[in-house]
Length: 188
Image (cartoon, rainbow, N blue to C red; front, top):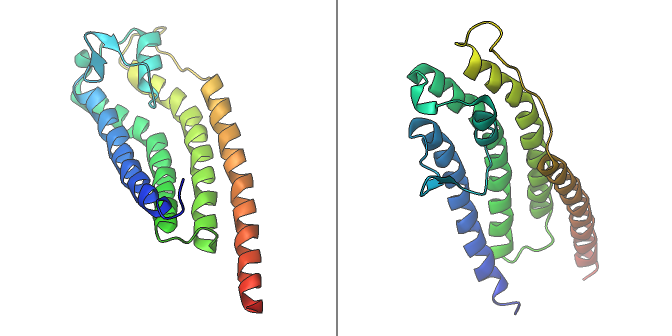
């Protein structure tokens, strides 16, 4: 990529990241308010960012039959991990904006990159913690013996944690590079 195009591409990526943030939060709420909104021709989409899809299928729930207060609680529970992810994406957006200003090795960029890794890890942890809470919330109106609390980690959680760790290492390298750059500028 040509050096003069990097700021333009970075600004585009910042804009795309903002739209992704909005999309994941809105789609999560819509999936509870309008069940099946994320389906195409009756088939569930192949991507999931929420706790809902796998859990609803496992619990054999009909979302449209849940009372509004229960769906509202489910929106709040499933939004907690997504807010952590959205915050991480917000820092990714800020990192792209830093690159758009041609600040490639800056302490600000290193901080944003570090925050991306931290919030991706928090997303996984909150997903793990909110899964049992969501299953208990969704099955609390069932008869005794039919209520469930689920817990589990998936391979995508492991990959996300690996990604978060990798981002943390790259952020540390970015931090060192910005320190070296600042030191070199003092000699000039």
